[in-house]
Length: 481
Ligand SMILES: [Fe+2]
Ligand SMILES: [Fe+2]
Image (tube, rainbow, N blue to C red; front, side, top):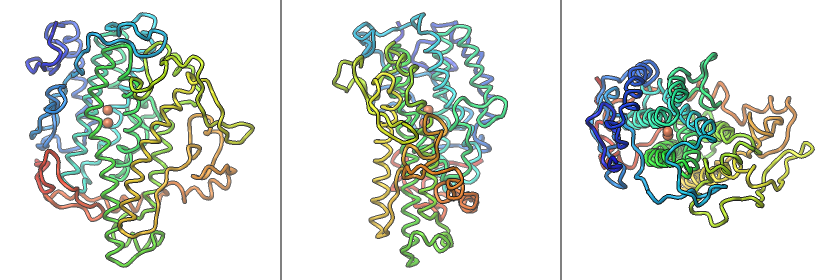
């Protein structure tokens, strides 16, 4: 048995899964590799491929010390296959197989379902790289540029993670799916990515921070529930992906916080106390708070759509069959089978929004979405503290879950961010108050200019408290070549 802890750097693909003894999978991955590099060159970050970026590379899976930082050219990044350590005693924690040993191979009857879970997760990873590919050219600092590229190479590693599972455990169909992951393109008319939010554009850095805060966090919730899977290789893969994911959340959270800080500082310095005096605020070259609210409304609602339908038999089956658990399933104190339980779900009843009690099994998407909303709300609280500290009276809020939905029961209605049902005409008339308008987009775009002098930051964003890897904010995080 290969030692699951040590990472082998002698193969072209660094790994801790014993690839050098697994010729079939190694060969399949080596065959896939050139197409992957073509994809990276075509769809990865535009420009900067020759630059030296101060990146973190995963070199192990032990807590603490799992990563090393160094200057790397992105195409030479060591995208590896790393699974969290195996617990040989691990048992399936939920569903009808609860208490049985976790599966090390794919159970035949769940093959199609498991493959689909891997493909959907895998598809989001390269999609986000594609969505963000133009942003390097307008980075507000070298620090931010480095963070962008870090997120990009790690999302690409997450693609590797899913491709490994497909190649190793799903035979010929797995290989075809692995190729499909390189074929689809975010926003493409003929071959789009699988999920809506991953076909939207990420036109500017504010969108990037919103995306990493709101949309990447959906990814985190999905990974958390897959980390509970009875299919052990999937659980171990996603558990290690979560380690990297924490940094992506940080980039979004701290990014938005820094934008707010800068806006408030500029307003106070100019003696502007009315956050709704948009022209005055914008004339300072900073992003007004109402525009931040609209961006948050958009990204939150797009991200809610990723949780799928309110009532889902697919979700119930994935749970009952032990494939996808609840958020922190192993910390929940109940029977982990949910056969007779109910869960409150917001639904449309005779045209009105009402809470109904539904079987907990079919309401699992909602439960995960509620967990997501709770986590998301904690960031909003932190941002509001920042505004309050500056002495400005303004409060950011999460919109109602009924607002701006394209998937699920609320896609049939239109509501205000407060959840008031509106007729279509009124919604259309007012929507620029609630969602970023063309004007807002043009204003944000007008601020996007690259700042590439070490230690300098664009005027619309405050410097970070400190750099990455204990470096100071004026460290040369990217050596542009
Ligand atoms: Fe990811
Ligand atoms: Fe991520």
